[in-house]
Amino acid sequence: MSETFFKIKHANVWRGDVLALRDLSLSLATDQSVAILGANGAGKSSLLKLMTGEVRAEARPQTSCELFGERQWNLEELRHRIGLVMPEEVARFLPDEIAADVVLSAFRGAYGRTGDMRFKAAEKARASQAMEDVGVTELAGRCFGQLSSGEKRRFLIARSLVHSPEVLVLDEPSTALDFAARLAMLERLRTVAQGSGTIVLVTHDPGEIMPEIERVILLRAGEIIADGPKRQVLKSDVLSELYGMKLRLTWSKGWGIVRPA
Image (cartoon, rainbow, N blue to C red; front, side):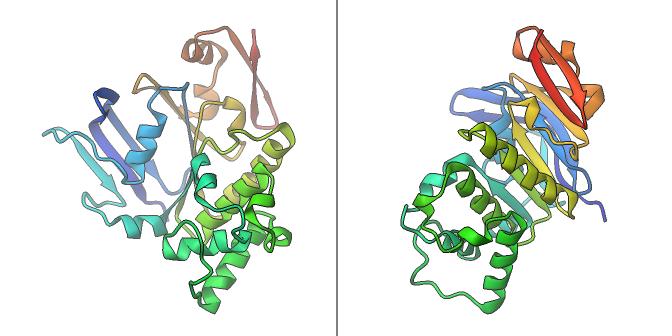
């Protein structure tokens, strides 16, 4: 059943003395995967942090922000309802941490060693299922530091899935991955998207927007300049304006392929 999990009206978000989001209004529901696309500095990270409850909008009479229908929220509860994967999470685990323990650590909201922690059989089963879902079961006993960048990223996705979140938010999921690892990552994410989960993909790369994502939001300088069905929003002239260079977009099996014009 569809539910509006994120709704903001006329939100200003400041990052220091910089107005990162300007008078932003947006509504997202759990029955539709969406991509938030923009160049570096567009405000994507600020919108992501607003969406996951890490930052709050400037208090103004015309401003409101709701997560799952609530204006006040508990961050611990949100972590069970919204799974978040960020590139910087990789550095939060020690190289000799067992990869399976990286996934299990989600149950304690912890980063770092889990050797002294005790986990229930049900928690271990859910972690095993999450690792199977992203195709890393055979790597579970390896040290985290021995894994490739793509394998580490897949374990972080498994970590975000253990609570069976209603929404999975992915921040630049293929950052620093080579071509093969990027393709493998996107295929695994397609499997997640084809299941019951809702994906919010935050990216600067139109080529990461998988066929299962129906809606695209374009951000520029902290403002939404387009929001709608993917094929209506992603057009050569619109992307050329967004990135400040001539681009040509073609479609192949639901993927948008962007090249210099």
